[in-house]
Image (spheres, helix red, strand yellow):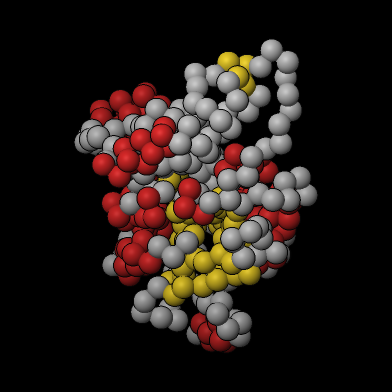
Length: 338
């Protein structure tokens, strides 16, 4: 009885906007994904179930064209998917990258975690694994994605992610070959939020079990075979039920080099407030890439949450979603970038 009274008293002291468990937090204003995850918790599902169903909702709805099928065609016009899910209790992870023909990437990631001893499967072999596990093979191309691809070709394949090659990638399409004399070009800036809208989700259930996950179709016009940060453990997301969870979105080619989600969770483990942990993780990247586009969300084991983002032209704020006991509907939150 005394313990219950103490818990109740401590809960009442939590800062406004920071609530006790359970909590669902995800990147971007993907409200239906938040609602799907929260509904899963409310109906007795686990934190893992909630992450999977929340991300699946985005895959089905093709959130902003950057999650799921029919978006972000690569240089060959194909849409491929990356996803990851992590169990913060057991530290098990399942991930897929460059997945083809299978729409439910987060589902396949969970299958990798639960039906194999592996952590990450990639490319055609990942797709074959998914088919063998009962996932339906479907064409991920749509009229919309083909139109994006055809317009890109008409515009001399601009923008693209090539450098130090011939012919000049800023003026023409390939096939490309390395330059005879290497010319160090400045990294091109691609601060287009519509080409980076990974859904990253963190869920803490009533008992403090933490799970996290991601799902994306990657960069539009990426080099075929490119894998971003989303399915990389500690980069796209990280979960540890003894500390908390974090998930990132943005320029994955840069962000994955710094494992920002892992860093943020470790900072929370040492007592850092989630907002401060997120900001430190972003600051670490800014020291080397001051103009990178990206954001991160964080939640600790008490249900406190926060976010941070790097300020670049056209991206002064980052919006994310939260569901908790404060409201019956998902709440849209924002943070000023720095």
